[in-house]
Figure 1 (cartoon, one colour):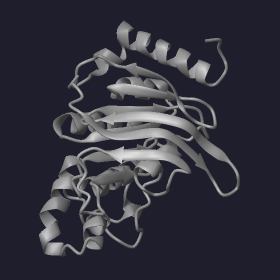
Figure 2 (cartoon, one colour; figure 1 turned 90 degrees about the vertical axis):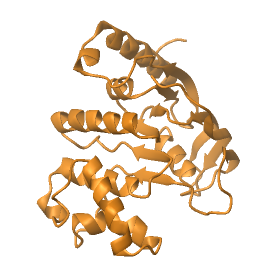
Figure 3 (cartoon, rainbow, N blue to C red; figure 1 turned 60 degrees about the horizontal axis):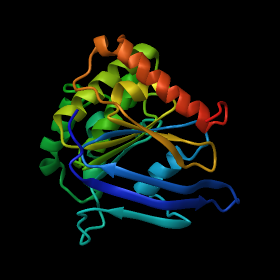
Figure 4 (cartoon, rainbow, N blue to C red; figure 1 turned 180 degrees about the vertical axis):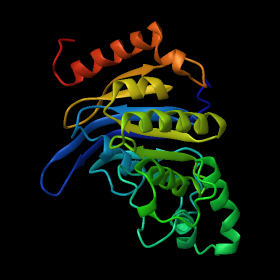
Length: 259
């Protein structure tokens, strides 16, 4: 496992109350290290996605602070890529134009953007599908397009909100491996929301276990296994031990087990 070099983002005493009165987060403290693969694990409705959106500046905390280290304050764009639960592709646009969208919104010409779009598609294994439309793609391929679109701006931090939850198990395992290999070869930080203990232990260098709503981090687990990880790790006794320990923390976070 690569060591965390320095802190990239720090969430301090975050509360988030929505207009309907729901308190989604309360006293959330979380530090995100540069180049780490951090999973947020917790039950449905615990505020995992809310925390991700606050990091992405798609909302503001009711109280508390979110601090970026080494951030260029002269720019309103902070090198964030976001992959949502659904691919959210434009059905009328082909694969190239879907991936090109973030660069087009930054007023970068199509010709200038083309190498970056082609590079992003190559990273997710979609070279040759540039002219295909979403209706012609499988669910896994649509998600690959969504990931390529998030990567085309070369983000420092990639935020992923349960991107593989709706996929079949075989496709999900394949995308887990591809994502892990990409992260290992690139210099991103990944924050990955999941409900799956098994997925979090396979992918992550660190797991933050969140309580039921209002969400906060109750426990953290470091997964001290080297990358790249293989199927041998997934079937090992050590993997099962990690899963067992994380599952116990999750049960405590949900109030199902005595601390």
